[in-house]
Image (tube, rainbow, N blue to C red; front, side, top):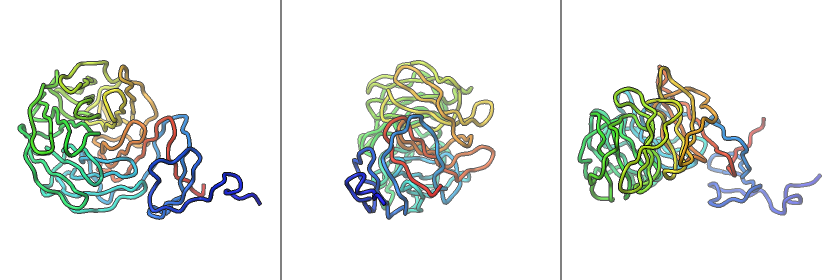
Length: 317
């Protein structure tokens, strides 16, 4: 009988975490999640079922990646719960100092930032992998706030929110500074990108909108709209030329996912479960939609894998 080593020249590795830079065709056993994984090639992007949140809720803040994610806050009633995701399951960690929903987040699983939230809060907290610490507030208190989801806990952007505002603020690790406003005051935005290359899409102003704006580090510019107007979609992306927006509420709760290429939005594979206000975590290649609301609060999680090389989990099926 031919073995994997004879065919591929290596043994299946046993690792406590996924390798940082796997090569296509590499297979390993992850002892932390007790799963067999490998790096394959995905020809068509799709959503797959992940592990459930321990506490069902919507409108959480999010940070990190699909295999090392962080979700915090949410509600209603507003919660302080923080949970980490390891690529297959969620683990409860230390709570936020202030319970809140409709907040924004950015950073990594071990160095995150939480800001704003319901009802119209200016509070900001930093996460060091163990505890949350209160730091300097936003200049303008707001909930339903958009964020540069791929930013860091020392450099990010907050924009829009309620009470209905176009205000944009830049975080430098110590203080928030007001910078140039969105062109259109909007709440319930899907955000993406960094403090110098961000994307704002969808939301309400006050009616539900498909508006999209890009941020170049100085100004916002109106660009081509989403195909489907919606408020409170999830959003993920590393900059203002590569992002996805998923779910949200239009005339009903929707599952539609759209991908942004820097010029246009294209409809791609839908979420398995229509939902609004799911977590915004990851990138257009590997995103995480945890929780949300579609008439009831959800604990279910879905993992997005875009076209290209991607880590896949093998099952007995």
